[in-house]
Image 1 (tube, rainbow over the protein chains, first blue to last red):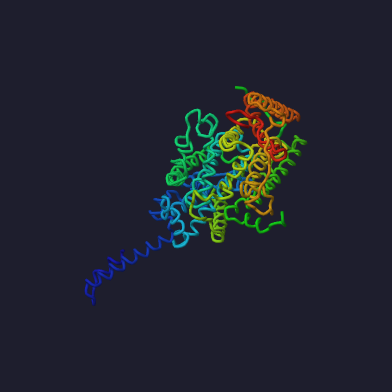
Image 2: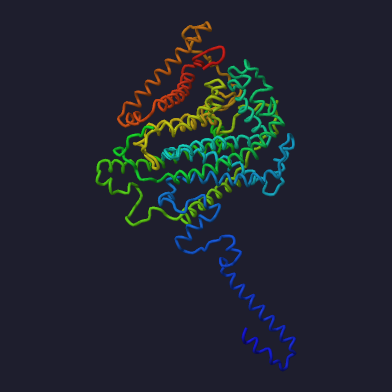
Length: 301
Length: 314
């Protein structure tokens, strides 16, 4: 800046106005260069700082903060048991289940763009999706297979949690939340089965909901159902299907349960499930083995 | 009977919606082996430490390598999160390849007048559908699912064994693991496999490789237990069935009680349980065992009902 000031008073050959512009341009380009230079370190920019709030470097503190200050990452603790990252302990099944739930939500929303839950139109939409929509077939396949995979992953997750005794004190309640999530996973899959409105889904849901006829007290073919005034037109199956047969109302109800109600319930329960994993002391192991000779006598209330 | 119908078997196994079951046929044994393998390693360590109390005081008590000075905890970022990313990528690749190579099934437009034969529930509910053979719908379709859900939920509240929390082991939790594996593998997964591979048109039993013949006529006279004993009048049937059921509960309950209190360690755990915990556990075990017993007497002796009443049959 200093030399700029010193050079300006001595314009000899060039008209002073032009020189002033040139100097202005040079100052501008210098400043721009400085800015561009600064962009090489994006973590120093105000934009980045506004988003991430903490400095990231190789320090212990920074690594912890990168997890703790991020709303998505902070489901994790800052540190975990050193052996917990071994695949052999958890098989990653809980995480895979959650990841598949995200994949299903994403592909599911895209599928909703192409689908009308009304009799007649629904089946045509699927045929259209599979034959005319770009990547429509891939989209539908991914949704279907991710759903099947999720059921398998949930089962294996439950199996692993049982075999590692991870439901034991203080994690009893979270196991129960998990059982409810398992049931809702199956119900999510089941309600989706009807939506293409093809023979496969129709008869699967017919077989499935026919069992509701036999509900004790609440079904018209169940024990003590008729005695309580249950008919095909007012029992629990009627409530599920919105009618006495699997038809347009059943399609709409399956659609709403599948796309709206159950995903909301599952999302809430997932929040509880993850929160409780943290609150109950993090993931259960791999813990040091305990010995029979060390069992403490039970405390009576 | 004809020869072994490979094509039929292939058609069932390669039906797109049955692929998950075929996958489970490999995944379930693999992960069982994987868990039991680690359990045996831990069990060896437990034996070693039980035999050497001095070592037990100083040992880090895991089968994984350990050196003094190593950190017990590591940073989530990056050590855990890179694993999660890796798993997510692998799952995505598997899912993409699967989706590119195999199309989701789409049958004809639904038609209430054209019954599918066999009309099967989605594969994960085939265990319940298979149960319909052995129980009335209100038991198979409503009572049993409820009991499975509630039964799973009470597990943590009746398992008073403090050992085996947070690591794989077999020897410290023999009874719990045997029971769960029996319920999950035999009563759930095998039933799903039967529903998929064995049950053909009319929900008839076709061995793998046997051609599904919708016109097959099977003469399977189903008898009820009271008939075998010449009981014919309804009031006597009610009483007879109730007595047989009470006998079943008494015998199986007593047998289980003997089994639980026989071995030293199980007895120790039994003594830690409250009366409520024990009664709840016994109830669920007795009901659970009713399923394989009814399957056996149905398949071997063609007995349909044990207890007949005007309101319900068991």
